[in-house]
Image 1: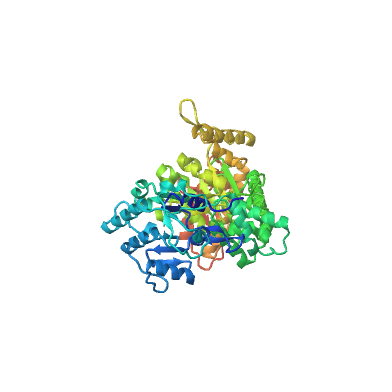
Image 2 (image 1 turned 60 degrees about the horizontal axis):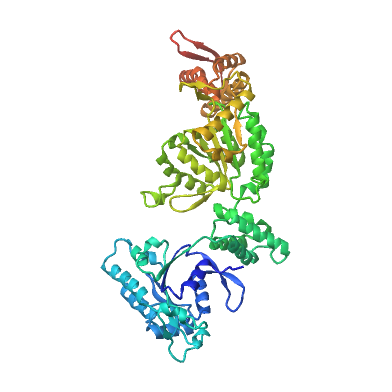
Length: 636
């Protein structure tokens, strides 16, 4: 299997016909490189990988320039430093010779026309040679013009046989025009002394440098492919605990798991993961945990805690005490949590991937507990219902509002600030993310969720990747409760008197019609799968239970604020229950609104005028409606 990096292969292939190379892309990564004198591969930075290849081809000297330090020989070995100093008259200070663009121009010429030994020049951080590649000052323009002219004037070297073996030549090698290479003897290589420009993007150099010279080649270093990552995993395996005792099949399984979980990551990132595992003693079999810790930037995974299983085991009762009358929704939520804790999310797929721990789509009438269930879920897992990340999607009704989620595109004002969503998830990777009233968002913004639901990651305007693999995603929606009739009027699609099966069928059908036909995005619906949970209407019985819970909250608040026990007799409770549950069209929220008008407001007036000093208990004796429509509460 050929594991030589692709850009090295391109360099070896093009050195006979190209004098300069613009190398861009993933230049700060590590690369598979043979260890000196062996066939064993290791991970090495670009310069070391480049020198390994060049030295094997008979190159004896490599100069490296960067705008801060200047010019230095590479590698820093006595024989090479001595040769470079003699050939190029280097005035080294602590191993480096300060150099301006004018000095660099002279060095480029000396390298390109050097006949005593094959050599190369690397211009590192070439993206920072100018402030703007399309607005050069006089010095910068002369420099790049000289580089372009040099690329056309240089000729490849036809070495003596002594040079091919790496020994010192007895006579200077001859040169041959590039056009005559085909007539050279088969055992003689004619190669340029190249100049290599290392840039972040090819646009960082003047476009005419590469467009107007046939001798300048552009090479883009991409992300490592599967086979490269697999070999890197084998190289890094000894850093994981238990490697020496592992069998061959166990090591093979480790390599496959490490490779699968690092799709989209660089080899440098894989090396960082291995170092993280080495410091924390992560075992060979737990490599997926090491990868996840690296991706989300946290080493403590709450999904692995034993106490979480105990909390979830008793969680249904705790959640149902807060979300009344939605047993099916609560059961579905608990199932998602259990699946997440057991690591079976997406288990039907071949690989685990990086999908979120769980995805829930809560649909149903307003005020039935959709948002409350998300809060209860957050409290169960993280101990604080305010730990969830909430986005009101009505704020994202315009297409341009999508920049708030991910950050502005590169080049626009504020792009370097990142997005609200990506920044929040990086800060709290283990979280519940609530997208409230998702149908109110612009359809283009909904496209962003495809990548979250499928790959579990997003890249913001700064180019930083955020991973959602440890989060639970919750969408809420009122879709299907109201629909448009043939005249375009908004009519109610389901009613409180409908059976739960009828409500669920109609709401599900409306959701399907919305994504398939109105938005023409069935792929979003497909990503949601069977995670759509339809909430039912609040019944009078459940409405009474909700009101009783609210009254308990009121009693607790009065005691907290005034250190007085508020007693509400059963007759008063029954009166309030009748008043607050006579209209349940707005669900539990409507019950709360009515209770505020019928009891909390008049209670506040009564407490304001009542002498509380020295009292430990007060009792509500009556709630009366005056002729002017003002409700009063009598206390004693």
